Image 1 (cartoon, rainbow, N blue to C red):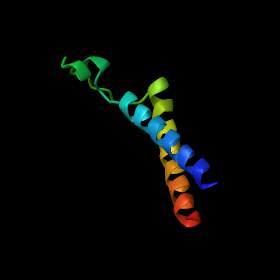
Image 2 (cartoon, helix red, strand yellow):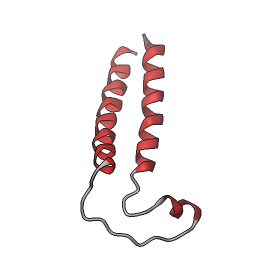
Image 3 (cartoon, helix red, strand yellow):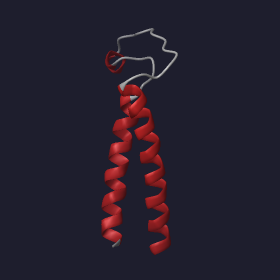
Image 4 (tube, one colour):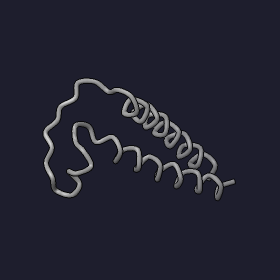
Length: 73
């Protein structure tokens, strides 16, 4: 059971990192490589909105799995 929880926590952490990287607000992918972009958005729309909500769901799931892991061990 503990090994299964460890695998779930690691998988959840990887997904969380990817989602956080994807939602760099106001910046495009080019800023990672040194290009500057000065866009300002006032509202989340479309895919960005779903990525934002999915990130919060994954955060809560990560916290619950970590708490459960601490209780079991």
